[in-house]
Image (tube, rainbow, N blue to C red):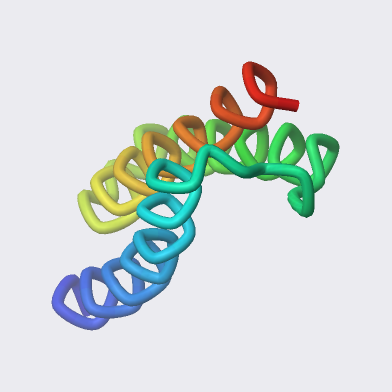
Amino acid sequence: MTLLGMAAGTLTTVSFLPQVIRTWKTRSTKDLSTGMFSMFCAGIFLWILYGFSIKSLPVIVTNIVTFFLAFIILVLKLRNG
């Protein structure tokens, strides 16, 4: 089950990489929703807390990485409009 959780978490986490790379290169965030990324980061943070409460390494690790990637996009959105 841990392997399945890590595989699922890895796929959903890696799905953010193209957006992070594109946003970083172009510095364009005009088509991204600030509200969506704010709520998404808050939700991912709660998943991290949940992962710690149930002591689930796949939930903790994959959500920390996802939070980091989504937070980069959110910061770029807030800085660049």
